[in-house]
Image 1 (tube, rainbow, N blue to C red):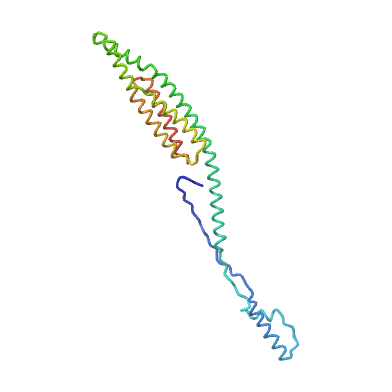
Image 2 (image 1 turned 60 degrees about the vertical axis):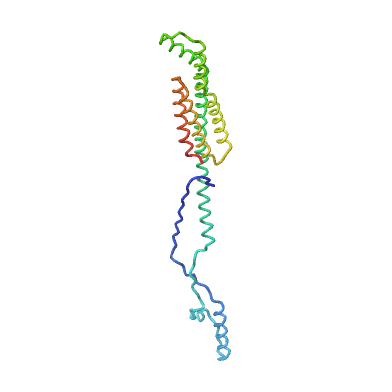
Length: 234
């Protein structure tokens, strides 16, 4: 029922002083009665047998020490533990709903950041063309269109972040599905947070846009907050 984490519970057993409850020894009582009746018959004494006569024989009453029943004790422990687990599960469900709302909100923010990065990276080829043209002018080098196209294509290829963005979108979708459908899911979600970080680190290393770097920082900030919440998920 706990599924994940470490559980310690304590059982305090306080034993009261034993009670000595009286019990009648029917066998001895029967023998004493037989003896008394025999005496009455033999001696021809006409008298009734009274309780007072019998109570003088103190060994007809035994005092038995009461001990706790092991089965009763076991059922009490299980009942107490079950009650505690019910409370734990209820608390987890309530906290889980709050965490779920917060995480889904942050996933939406991540999706928005990915969309912004995607828009910024669409003009990466033109960015490198303009950059090489500017550099050649600064160095007073005659513009070589073929070279500019070749260099721009090469660096645009190195800067391509399409795969990282697509994987990040996939991670968001997986994250939402796991939260809705799987239990326990904490370890899976923690792994996905690591994957998110890996994708955005790669995006930052490939990109030359300041705006994209700023978006990556914002995304990683959201991922860190999600990961903190994930540590509280079973």
